[in-house]
Image 1 (tube, rainbow, N blue to C red):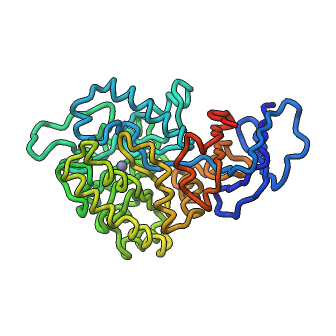
Image 2: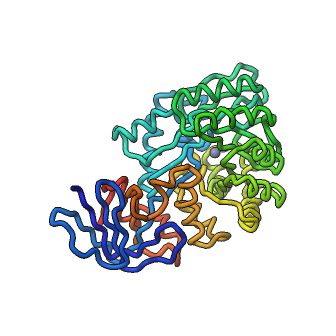
Image 3: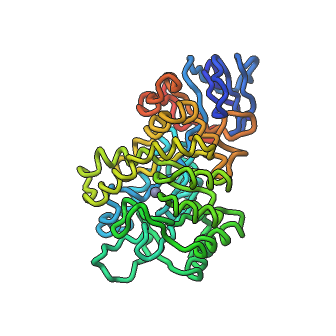
Length: 411
Ligand SMILES: [Zn+2]
């Protein structure tokens, strides 16, 4: 039997419970067998034992909003100028860098087909477990329609990078949803409001009719899956909630009424604060057009306030990054931003336990508890004292375990 023992760790288990100093975790056949408050006692002579030397052990982090195919910051140009083969090769690097940052699971928010998930699962490439939606559904002129207002060609069905599907009306939305589900996606993504990185809309708008949203939700739920929706405004949030959307992304413009609607429906909010922060700092230098940076700054100003309202109302809060291009290495800064409202422990719980529930993977992922998959990280320093220790991942993250397999270990 394949046994791994991690000892002398300060365990933050992801449930929100107080840290356990000097604890041990016993891993057998890829799963957590025991979590002990002290030393592991007798271990089999064949076991691998790692002394964590007081460092902090956490569940593998989960990023619930990722675009691995967003290899450049300027998405619209990327889809025009880069060949699909190059997009795929560069996407492989983005996927590996997510795992390097201690994110052992990521949920795709659009662009990458299920083959990336299969490539990781088959061990062809290094990366986190992936949950895939493939191509986001967008209405004509919606957040995923990358044509400039001046361009009149029929939208092209792209295959790589940040590929989307432009579809209108209940019948087309239904057909697109069924086609994606046929391809084996884990969830559907729908653009239900304007966005910062699109050329023809404003962020305070709503997109898709209630009937179209309901069609996507119906098709997803018919096969036990769910819909995640891109939303900013109160109106788009309320539309999504009444259509039965499970996962509301961004939500920067939400107000008390829409927050209460989310709470009553049992849906999750997935704020993605770091992408606004990084684009407002770096976007111009990375070639993002002025109009898009303007919209990003509008969203950025309201992000923390929206999180505070949602938290006060009692909405379930997950965590995503939504970072683009070379900014994708700043994933852990999302925890720092969230900690301003939720505190460091709240930010960790959002990124582990709550995200696992949101992804319907709580049986296997999200906490350091017996029976779960051994997706674990060990970090030098105390993230409850300084949440930024997660950001300097190359030096600070000393161990990354994926299903009990050692991906990285520096002693
Ligand atoms: Zn996104």
